[in-house]
Length: 69
Image 1 (tube, helix red, strand yellow):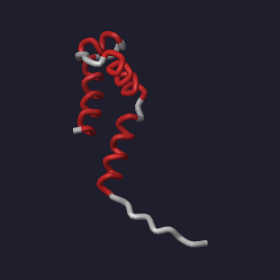
Image 2: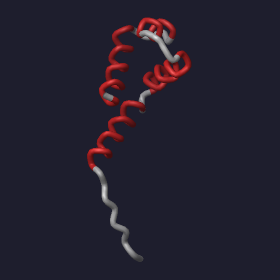
Image 3: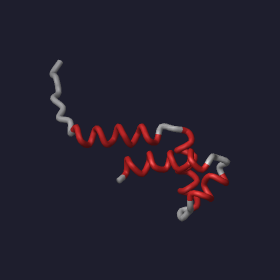
Image 4: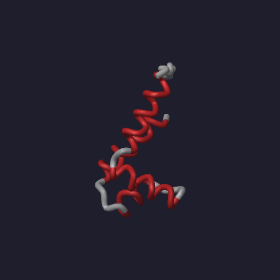
C-alpha cells in the first residue's frame, strides 16, 4: 500500500479548530440561529427572546466574535 503525503497548513487548521470549538455549544448555536432568522438584531433582543442572562449572552457573542475577527 502506497502512503500519501499530506501537507497541512497549521494556521488554517488552528483557525478551523477554534471556529468549530466556538460553534460546538448549544447556546451559541441558538444565538446564531436567532441572528440568522432576524439578520439585524441587538443583544437585548437576543437575551430577552432566548431567555438568557445578559452577561451570558455577551460572553457567548464575544467568543464567537473573537474567532471570526
